[in-house]
Image (cartoon, rainbow, N blue to C red; front, side, top):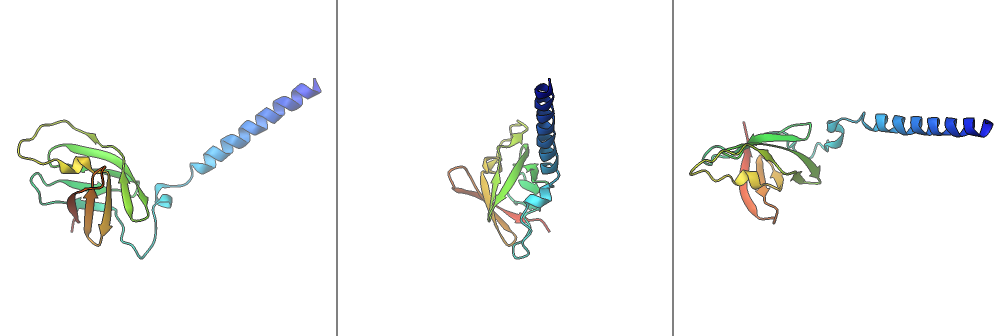
Length: 134
């Protein structure tokens, strides 16, 4: 009987320790995962193009990206690895727009140099450029 009580208390305290670890790991905020170097400009904010339909992206401090490819609303999340912004697959509305090149919806990665964001597709080819909104 005593062995059964020890086994149950061991399971209980083990589960308690695992639960505490998960709880503490959830306490970090998205801003803790964004590089805070003062040497590099922040990527957060709105980035725009003068192309037809005015494609744009707004990158949030919470690692979300929302905007328009010039025709459809787009939304995703992103990560930063060094100087590369990596975008997850976009959620998008499905409108059809004649005469609009929806190049921004094909973004896979991007890099920022000053107020210019160079946008690349999955093959690493440059597909467009966005400029920081003033």
